[in-house]
Length: 68
Image (tube, rainbow, N blue to C red; front, side, top):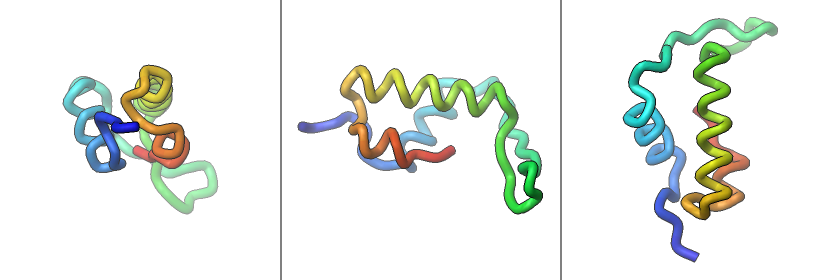
């Protein structure tokens, strides 16, 4: 099957183009070992990835490994 988006780089670029007003601020995670985006941004990402996968625009494998 041919998917419209096949890489994480393409996913991230399209996400930020579609949601330019979401905060890009990152905060330290609870363990203090890394950074993560604010909750609104993370929720939008997960919902968007899920809709792309269910709509057949990305593979299930890409959906499960994609990170913002």
